[in-house]
Length: 304
Image (cartoon, rainbow, N blue to C red; front, side):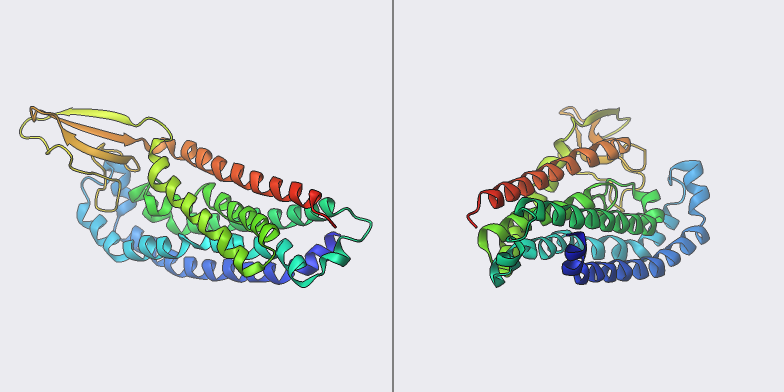
């Protein structure tokens, strides 16, 4: 059964290795240049002494050279890539058997259909976990110099370091498997699985993530006129260090009190990164388990 599953999915495995190899080549080329520039500009010593407060020109030069390539390109491509990867692998897993009629042979053997599905899911899920971990390792290595200036909470890189990238792929895969069983056609199942995955993905990112834990409030007394109430702040490349004075803090808002004598800053501390990663990854893993569990249950009840 394992050998048969490998034969059926080896082309997908080779394609995934190709994607990983392309990512690694891109990361090595740009990452090496980034590390050279980072050391040449004296940023390591500056960060060690002053949290980048006395080397703003060097920081701006470095981020101006590599900021767009590091953040915009990855965010644009990898926003949907985990979902596409998951549904492309997951949707045909059952749908292709139903679409081409091969289920008559596959499910008439001595191995029960639920065991047949469980073995395939175990093999493919294990491969996706390895792939997700490898992609995360490559991106984290590539991003390391920029992370020292912005931290890991930056919105367009948080999604690709830590645990969540693998969880995104698994969730899309689970949705694809379930959609394939229900729709029985691979291409429509991919579309039907990708749309809810993307909606959930964006909903968690823009609506829930900042509320995983209550933000910390920092009140600073002003010697003169404080900032106007409602002014936004952030941990983006334009704010190194952010208003909190600590690189990596996710500043949610900066405002002043009614009297204009204090600045009120709400933020998520940088040391909450792994807590946030665990919470968000847990949400997507739970959705994966629900989708795959429903697929196994429905396949068990499906008439032969």
